[in-house]
Image 1: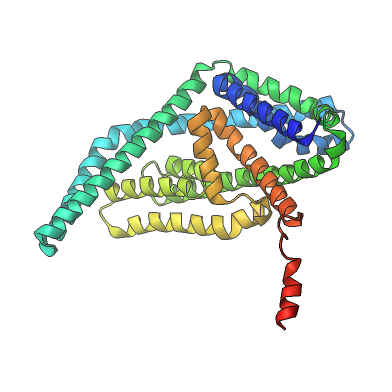
Image 2: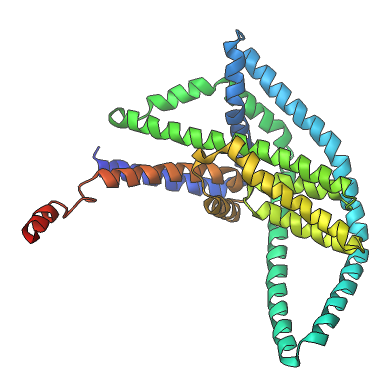
Length: 363
């Protein structure tokens, strides 16, 4: 098989994969989730196996521990989250009235200092921005609702995911060996090198970013709770969890937290404290947590991560979000490999052979 035929074969296989992903997205969700969990837990399972346990015992220990901890966390958080959401829904009219009253004060102050033309321009600009914000928010909420609804319709998700995780984790080394045996022999070493780079990128990002999100969620939740902000814990904890989307997660939490703070407090000081908590959290994330736990070796730029998550969610729903970062990591490694091959090829240095002779003639 020629290189051109191999390229066509891989291209067709990738197109079939995308087609199946689009058609069977909801069905594949527990399997993709189980695969992701097994990938994250495999190093811990290998560590226990090296301590003298068999693979099946190590798999049982790791899988049971992980899902027991997740279940305990859900049982602890779900009542708190539900209660705060109910209270938040009940307080929305009061918050709306308070924000409207403060907005009228600001509008009155602007009217006293701006002319009719400036006020008309400001009104038009504010109306356009508000319309875009409302449209974006409704679209985002609708997408989340559809994703959550799809998950809820999969009543077997909680049962299938642990089973998939267990079997994949138990047979992980055999699966890796089997896939390795399928690699084209002539290019096996090159492919293994690229897969190793993808694994380093994914492990550095996924495991490190998960730790960063949990630490940020604890910091924001406890900080806002101590600051006296209504629903502070849930706002802070959710802000930390969605911080895997660079900047967007913190921005959403900051806007929600500040709106609640402005509506709740009549003084500037507590509002400033809430803003300071988000500012300190952002400094911790950018200067301490992310450099220490994720590091710069990941090679996934924040803009590409945002694009991958939004594109994956829009095209394939929740399963697209799960696969977005791995696919982006693979694309990034392949792009760097292609660029390296180009820089080593004659195409990059075409025409340079004539340059020295030209320079020597001119001198």
